[in-house]
Image 1: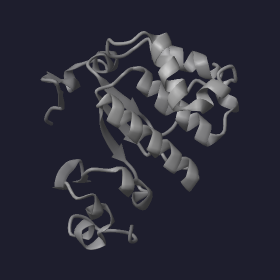
Image 2: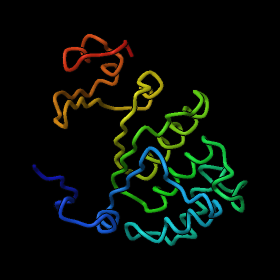
Image 3: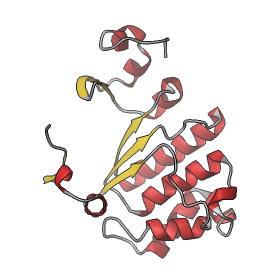
Image 4: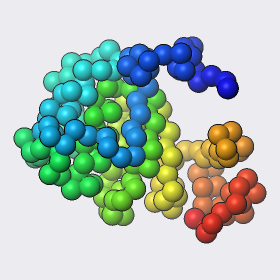
Length: 185
């Protein structure tokens, strides 16, 4: 029950493509690229849906500058990329749509610490330059902490706590007061 609003529109009443046109970008954790298409074709296809803005070609160039891997592998099939490369492609596909709000479901899951840090660093730089809001669901709290500005705690679909202090993400006592921790962050 309830609603989810973005710029005054109730997103629950809209189709997924209408949500994208309103500026919502979403990266699901798995199965988020087209393995038989090239990297460039994945990006151009993703650019066909989204908020109005720069042309797909201009956006592609900007993202290839931000993620040089995309340019190096542009003619390679996505299914032949490593897990970290595929995740970078998936994030860039969502960014092709020029979202005003970007939701990421465990974007660094399965990535090495170095690959996760690189992806988060680039995302943070793009967020600062382009001004989109970023909401990340992630289990690797320690790796995420340097890149956040606030913490939201949800339990059973309800927001139960929030803090503008990024250090709360690693505060086991504060987190435990809102839900049970299996192990410290």
